[in-house]
Amino acid sequence: MIHGLSQSDQPWKALHMYCKMCLQGLSGDNLTFIFVCKACARLKDVFEGQKAHVHVLKLGFESYLFVSNALIHMYGSCGELDFARKVFSEMFERDLVSWNSLICGYSQCNRFEEVLGLFDSMQAASVKADAVTMVKVVLACIYSANWDAADYMVKYIKENDIEIDVYLGNTLIDMYGRRGLVDLTREVFNGMQERNIVSWNAMITGYAKARNLVEGRKLFDEMPRKDVISWTSMIAGYSQANQFDGAVKLFRQMMVAKVKPDEITVATVLSACSHLGLLDIGEAIHDYIKSHGVKEDVYVGNSLIDMYFKCGVVEKALLVFREMNRTDSVSWNSVISGLAVNGFANHALELFELMLRQLVRPTHGTFVGILLACSHAGLIEEGLQYFDSMEKVYWTNTRNETLRVRCRSFEPLWQS
Image (cartoon, rainbow, N blue to C red):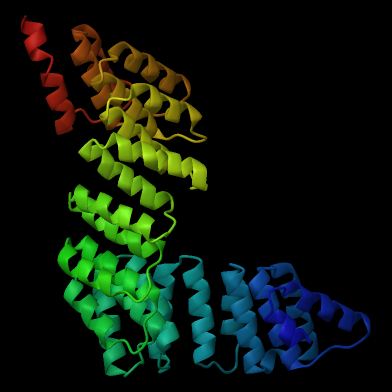
């Protein structure tokens, strides 16, 4: 019963059943604690896990390899790496599962240097890794950008004939894709006996990152099934390559295919609309966001602000800004610059003062907008004062080239 419940969608019932068993004076056997630990791991309930650990020690079950492995997995899943390491260190016997359980725990806690260190210790102990190990180790290389170590791991996989399953294959595709090594990415993809939609999406993303849209689109069209990530990755590829027409066209095809876009999709397409000045499509997307419950996060809000300002619709841009649940410095910078470009310099300066009162720290982008506003309004003295305050008050580097260009825009006004 505990076994089945620990693997169900209600693992807490396994712990409830174990408590009832204890109340009846039954202690359980070594298998009982394996499944109790599994339930605790899934619930991230370290309190109940430690209670189970106490019972394990009282009953002498810590000498069972599988019980100790379950304890390591439980503590690692709960983020209690010191306890996991202690159980591991006190084991009389360790196997591959012991090492993998500890490595997985460190990986889940983003302790990537320790993951690589454990892999080295594992090799020193002459324990051969498997696909599970290599997924976590290659991920550690990715997140620490340790490409030399990543290349060594690929060599290790080949030399030890480790089977590249769908999870390891996807991880290798991601690793090569982040480095722009699309030929190696395709080599892994072609060699995979089993692929899932993550495999295809990772390939599309890799081609997009490398700006190889021809091959990326060819693969996209060959996909047996496309989800929102597939469409968004390809749309983003067009946008990143400044092929904004292609991004908008593909978005229209996505709508025809009845795939609901997410916040990343709409932010990407709105950016393309901004560059092309496609107000009608931008407004249609805004209406779609409202009517279909697309999450309006700060990135979507910023994209709408940018689109409306670049299309000259100032009131709608300001309305979006006022209705945003959360703003960031990009939001403020977009509004300040948008107002300046559209001839509302004084309003831009007022908004800057409001930004400071709300304790939002200005950035380079803020001062670019402020200097632009002063330049448009002919406010020479004010512009120079803002420029002077950048380093003295806000510790902003005035050697930024964009800022220097904006400041030089005052020279004709000064000389007139």
